[in-house]
Image 1 (tube, rainbow, N blue to C red):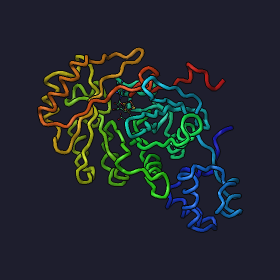
Image 2 (spheres, rainbow, N blue to C red):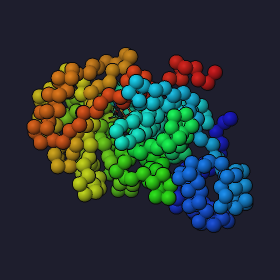
Image 3 (cartoon, rainbow, N blue to C red):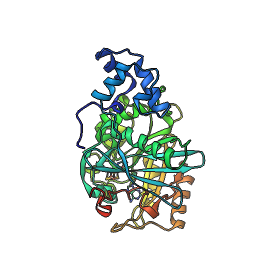
Image 4 (cartoon, helix red, strand yellow):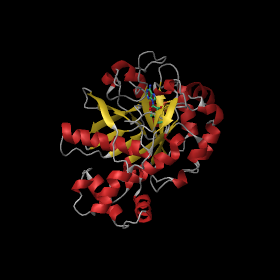
Length: 355
Ligand code: SAH
Ligand code: SF4
């Protein structure tokens, strides 16, 4: 089946669906009923929507695309992390990872097939950009994974958090990621709280300046270095948007009270893990409004960098803490199935999925 040109039902925000239905001659309130069936009752067959008119059911089935992306492969890591390969209707695929923790189940979702930013430490970056994902393909990752878990693992499975930390640069696909995020937050639908959604960006300055026009979710900035030379080596985007331009843009992010910006810092052995890096970080960041998330580098086959020792990681964190920073160290999850950060890369070739 090739891609369809019919509008997808999952690409509509509540408001968008209301307008669309009214334009097609249906009642505005039907949008809420549809949202309720889909996102609160997990009922995807319009035939079973008892309070929806026959005429509207017919319209939805014939004039709209109700298909969801498919789980084409999944694998469970020893630590409970489950990686999914999600296939789209044009046979492109992206990876999505469900990460369990004490009281939550976080979905790490992709925003693009591949990525144009080309960071030198990132497995996805080596693919280049294939294409942006559509809103229904971003929402579809959440829906496909939830339905899979309910059917195969746990009837009551519920994803509680979302991080845009899979493949792709979410702000490069601003409009589609915005629509998908509005669907995730919709109170009459999935109803995720703004605090449970985190968008991670490599630092696209013009789009960061547009965040006033984006739902107020948590923002994480992939910093990785506190001086321009190292950052440019790691992230070519730093040539266009260096640290001074980046931090000028960050100042424009509307922060809700008590909220901090998270700075992701990949710690690479003998590279950005020195005393002078700690000093630069302490000088660069506003300690009251920042949180540093130290991500020990995840090695993957062919990667040029190494992960520092645990002792080194602890020293780096302690030094930042002593300097007055709030820090966390990201525990590596799912690395036995290459599901950890930066290890996500299409496995199509390996699995020959489309044969
Ligand atoms: N493109 C966005 C979001 C996806 S990447 C961004 O770069 O922020 C999500 C996080 O994983 C980023 O902080 C990224 O830098 C990190 N990451 C990429 N490759 C990694 C690797 N090999 N080891 C550890 N973290 C990595
Ligand atoms: Fe793209 Fe993020 Fe990977 Fe950089 S780290 S190449 S921005 S996905």
